[in-house]
Length: 155
Image 1 (cartoon, one colour):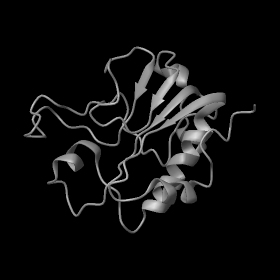
Image 2: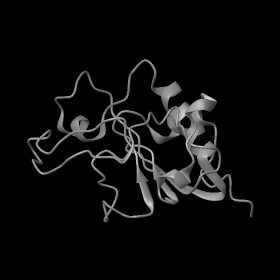
Image 3: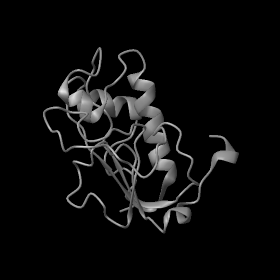
């Protein structure tokens, strides 16, 4: 990461939770929670998905989860719900909401994304990872990231 591009979480009104790939915020009951910094590379206005015309992708920030500009240990909780499907384009309705994995780079992309999530997470913080096995099995993802779930808990 470029040192000149670092941001302090305090710049974002003391947000303590980071959702690095929020999409249309379907993970959240409160899509405007004051303690969450919603991030996604994409921004899309209402109507982008004809199946759900009121759905929108309006993150607070538009950073790539593979290269987050935040200082180390900036957040108490990080949510990582990355794209989980391969696709040749954005016509599939699931891809419209969640984006898609690149068949050639998905392993490197997820590894870099996880590394960034761990980097910005405070010591003893919590990383929530959500995954759907539509295109890649969880076992393969765990081999790529080389960490076991709960492996960072010191008890």
